[in-house]
Amino acid sequence: MRQLFRYRFVVGAILALAVVPAFGQLSVDARGPVRERKWEVAGGQGGGTGRRLALAVAVRQLDGKRSTEARKPDVAFVLTNNGNEPITLPTSPHPGDFEPNDQNTGFEVETLALGIGLRADPRTAVISTILNGSSERSGSLATLAPGESMEVIVSAKLPTAPSAALSTSPFQASAILSHEVIQVKHGKRISNLEERGSAWSRPFALELPESSRPTP
Image (cartoon, rainbow, N blue to C red; front, top):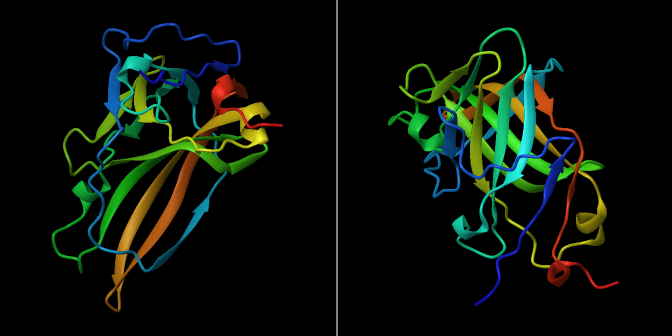
């Protein structure tokens, strides 16, 4: 029987030993399959304020037995409100659920992009997912009071031939909260994405098993 790959995530001085979510903690399963949007977006623009979210971001590995594939171990983003005011976050991994039936109708949605990449090059994403939410769709938004947290379970999609950088470089997790407006102009759907704020984890180490490390 092929042994599942096991990973050890160390986020700063935080060690998350529990596998089962704490009692009362919101848990979002974003492992898929995902209901994607039906209508293509022709273009768009985006911008941000550089605002920091009052959100602590941590990552932990779940029990390997829950993973369905050797190269897709399940991990969880743990998002904790470390501010003094409530914060509202999207919770749905299904962008298609917020799309109107009429492709000529615009709409708005909150998005939360979660990712893990090399600290030196954030574009090198090992894990990424986007949650969606709207006040018009019940249950798609969650408000965390100060000190409350939620976890988002995702599957890592690891390359079949890891690079040396993937084996040795520090990693960092990110959470980017945005507001997206889809408009229809001249029959084309345009996306305008405005970043509301972002948060980053402390750098952490990702230990690959011997069998998947690149050969010197």
